[in-house]
Length: 485
Ligand code: ADP
Ligand code: MG
Image (cartoon, rainbow, N blue to C red; front, side, top):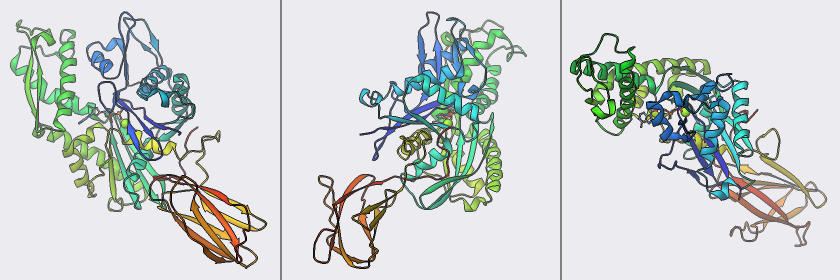
C-alpha cells in the first residue's frame, strides 16, 4: 500500500501527517507533541538538538541556534553558530528539520520507495522560495516530493469532515506572520480566490506585549532597575527568560483563566542595582490579554476584509472561517474575529495540524508517475468488443460511482457490475439497456474499489471479455492549484 505524507514546514512549528487513502494520522515528536518547533541548536562539542529542546536552549543561548529559517529560504543568509563554528544556510536547516520529522514515521513507511510527500508553502511564496523548499527536500533524501499552498491544505482538511459547497476565509495567524486567504469549493473542487496578510504580526507580538505591559511594570515595582534596562547587557538574560515565560503563560491561557509567570533567583541569576536577586512571580489573566487580543483582532480583520474585497465577495458571503496557527487556539481571539467579521463560528479543525493533514490528503490526489505532478486523471474511457463504449469517473468524492455504457447499434444489451473477487459484495443484477445506460455503484467510504463489468446480448451470449473497473472514492479534490514547480 502506498503512503501519502503531508508536512507543514512552518516558520515557528512544523508537523507531519500520513494518509493511507482512508485515515490520516499525525506523527508526534518524541516529547509527545503534535508539532515540532522549527529550531536547531548545536552546542560547543558539536552535538545537535532539534525541535522543543533546541527551542528551549535557543532561548538561553541564541548564538548557537538557527530559528525562523523558513523566512530566509531563497536568500543568501547563513547561520553562524558561535560555539561549534558550524555554518548552515536556510536550505540546509530546512533539510535537517525535514529529516527529523520524517524520522517520526515508522521504518516501513520511511523506507518504502512508494512513499510520496507533499510539503506546504505559504500562498505568497515566490519561485525562489519554492525552489529552495524542494532543494531542502532533495537534500533531506525524503523521496518524491511536491509542494502545495498552506491555505488550500487547510481547506482540504476541513473537507475531510464536511464537503458541502462553501466559501472559506482561511485565517492563519502564526508566530510572526498573518496570512489570510479566500477559497471556494464548488463541485468538489477548491480554488483560491485571493490572498493577503502581513509579516510581523503574530504570536510573538503577544509575547512582547505581555513582556512590556505586564512583566516590565511588575519588575520595576519590585526591583531597583536602571532607565536603560531594555538595552543594558547586564539584564539581557532577564529579558530573554521573561519573554520565554511570557510565551509559556500565553499558551497556558488558551486552556485556563489565568497562568503564573514564575522564575526563581537561581534561574535569572541577576541582581538589581541595589544587589537584590531578581525573580519573577506574577499572574497573567485572560482579562489582562483583552487589550492585545482586541487590537490583533482588529488589525487582522481589516486585512481579511481587504482580501475578501479583492476576491469580490462580502464577509457575509464567506460562510465559514477556518482558523489556523497557534494563536488561534485562544478562544477569545477567535470569538472576537468572528464577531468583527459577522461570520459564523469557525471550523473544528485542529489549528496546529490541519495544514499537514490537508497536505497528506492532497498527496493522494496527485499522479506521481507524471513528472509534472499533475492531478490524477479523473475519467477513464474504454472500448469493449467491437463497438461498446464504457466511460466512468475513476475518482470521485461522491458515495456513488457512475458508469456509462454506450451501445451504438441500438440493440438491447444486459449489463452487470459486480465487486471484483475479494473486494466486496456488490452486484447490480442484470440491467437491460438500449443504446445507452448509466449505472450507479456504491462507494460507501473513501478508498479504492474494483468492479467487474460484463455485457451480454438479449439471448445471454457474452458480447465481450469481462472488464475490470478501478474506482477511488476520495476525501476531496481540488482544481487549478499548481501542485509543484
Ligand atoms: P508558524 O505557522 O509560524 O510556524 P504556529 O502556527 O505554530 O507557527 O504558531 C506559533 C505561535 O503560536 C507562537 O507564537 C506560539 O507561542 C503560539 N501558540 C502555540 N500554541 C498556542 C496555544 N495553545 N495558545 C496560544 N498560542 C499558541
Ligand atoms: Mg503555519
